[in-house]
Amino acid sequence: MDRYQGFREFVGARQQSLMRSAYLLTGDAHLAEDLLQNVLVKVARHWPKLAGGGDPEAYTRRALINEHISWRRRRRSAEYPQEHPPEPGHDSGDDTLHRVALQRALARLTPRQRAVIVLRFYEDRSVEETAQLLGCSPGTVKSQTSHALGRLRVLAPDLAHLLHDTAAPGDAPAAATPGAPAARAASRAASDAEENDR
Amino acid sequence: MSTFRDQLQSIADGAPAVDLAERVIRRAERRRRGARAAAGAVVLAVAVAVVAAGGAIVTGGQRGGVITSGVITSKVTDTLPASGVGPLSHAYYDWCGEEWTPGRNTHTFARECAQWNVVTRAGRTYRMPEALSVYTEQSADEYMNTNAPLVISADGERVAYYSEKDQAFAVRDLHGGQVWTVPVPVSRAELVARPVLLLLSPGGTRLGLWGGSGLDVVVEVETGHVTHLPDGWHVRAVGDAGGPVIVTREGRDDELGALREDGTVRAFPPLEDTPPPDLGQPSPDGRTLAYLTGMTGAATSTPGPSERSTANATIVTLDAATGETLRRTRLRGAPRDFGAMRVGGWLSRTEVVVTEPVMDRVPKRGETPTLGERTYRVDVRTGRVRPLAVHTFRGWAGSLELPGF
Picture 1: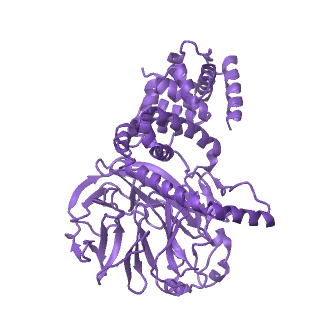
Picture 2: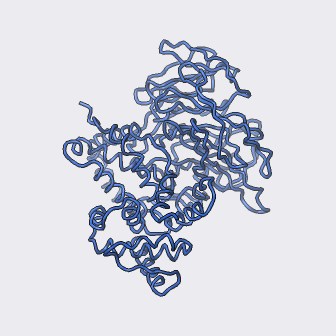
């Protein structure tokens, strides 16, 4: 019997969506592919069990987040064998500038903060779902979200207008303007969190 | 006006297309086999550890080499562990970062710092003492044949090298730790006299050898089965088991063919492009080959302003069984100074890796030059070019090897 029966179909159907999340998490195409490949190897090893009643996608997404966090913790950014990130696309205009600025700012968040941003604002997950995926309490998700947004505001002040729509009900209040005391406090908290995360 | 989510979506849109199922299954299978083999070796390993602990302090794990902003120094102290090593991003040697003058100081490099170093994708660097690197006895006349070859499979999981101890080439699985010695003896003296080209299949399951005295063979790595090529043909690209073996006629780089199962060669129609292009590895399904053509002034060896033009740069795909041209696509999105000519392995069903030497500028007086390779991904259907990575080291000379090349 083929122990990978159904695995190819699962990967075929979901790999692109998973790859997009991995790319947002790592900010690098090559690393994203490595991350996803590592995670899928783990999924493949447990495939008979997952296929027989588990939820492969939920398992994979959880593994992706966990692998990303532990991966990033194990290495320093200076160890990346890349001199610079891939160039942005060749379209022009404010959107491109914002995207590049956001990409750079995201790269400076801690792995957990980045994961929170991806889960909450890209994958549109609730606080509870995010907490479940990260293995922490909803309160931690809220505070991490707040810290992450505060840090983004400090790192990329030009993007403040983008973040207006990010205040989710129940989230801790985030700083509104760059340089404001609340923003500085958020930045300090984020730095503390960053240290703790390393 | 775009929202935060729109911008995240837009970044996510930059994620490359991937085709991972077969690669993942191959890796999972290797690990499964490796785990079974490792279980059998546990008793022996424990015994060795007890003996080792009696004579030395066991240090806490491996530390990676020094990589700063992508530039590697030659201070690599860790040797490659016996197993459990992740996929490689590249390998290099750098003549210890010192100036090398053929015929004058070549003999002084019988040192650890002149060995091959391998770098994992996670950024760890290890020396690989078992892989012969520079030929310290080489004469000045043969300065182009300076080192024993080392190649990395496209998936980064296996490495082929010359084992002086065995007087033969060997292939090593980095995660599982298995080492297969190629049952074709080649002495060090033969290598020093005539270079040998190694061609490892994308998954590292087959190895082609071309060079030396009549050394034209394809070896099934795990079984040791050797296929000799018909007279007058050399191996040019190798697929994994069941995939193609692409050959080229002696002295005619523009004449290609595919090795049939009966040992004869099916000659391809003449290539449309001259000079003969540098052919990449077969695609993951073994059906397609790719090469780049149409660039002028590409990959010159002179640093500084170049006269490159990518106006006619084209990626061409061939049917790996018949040699018929499948598609010719003009490149788009390539940087102005794009000069890649070498095609390596495939990242997915549609994207190949191409590389060019890093030649950013002439070093200042007293500064050690930075050498290396810059890679791009090229979509063979759309011609879109996107930067992938830059791998560099500091040195006056040396070599850098990338997976799939």
